[in-house]
Every structure is written in structure tokens, then in C-alpha cells.
Length: 114
Image (cartoon, rainbow, N blue to C red; front, top):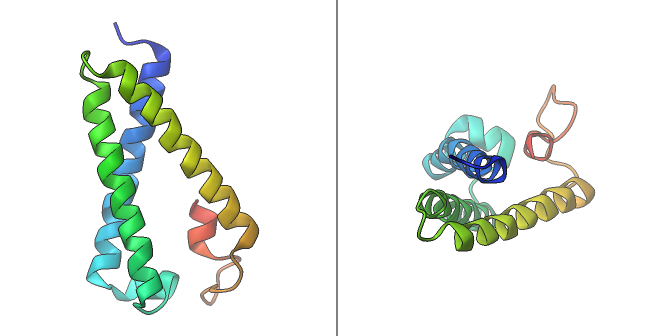
């Protein structure tokens, strides 16, 4: 039987993986749609892609570990740390990111999606 906290951790990690795969793919492909939202490819944007890749790899690894009874406790604690980092960086993004708003958008889509 899966406990509700474990299920929430697994769902959060799975959502992180599902969201980051297409975002990272778009950034790496340098698609025109991503250029509108993230701007032209620059070292700063590549660093952001690396951060997203690290989050994706960690979330996928933790999801596997979380579903393994042998590493469940460790994975649960690490998942809480990852989620805390994600919450903090998203709040800081909302507070500090200005500009970069494409035409016909009420705000920066990256900030709004966070």
C-alpha cells in the first residue's frame, strides 16, 4: 500500500519530469517558439538548460529510488530538498525577473508558468 505522502512525492517528481522533457528538448533544439519565450541562444540560456537537465535527471532518479522499497526513506528526504529548492527558485524568479515579455503576452511566459 502506497502512503499518501509517498504518492504526492512521486506525483511531484513525475510532473517535474513530464514538464522538463519538452522544455529541455525545445531549448536544445533552439526552436523558434522557444526563442520567442527564452530569447536567442546565449551562454546564459545554455546554463539554464543545464540547470533544467540537472533537475530532470535528479527528479527521474529520485522517482526510481522512491519506488524502490530499499531507498524509499532516503529518496523521500532528497525529494523534499529538491521540492524546496524548486519552490524557492520559482518564488525568486517571480520577484526578480523583469522584461523579456513577447508581444501579446501579459507577462513573461517562463515566470508565469513557474
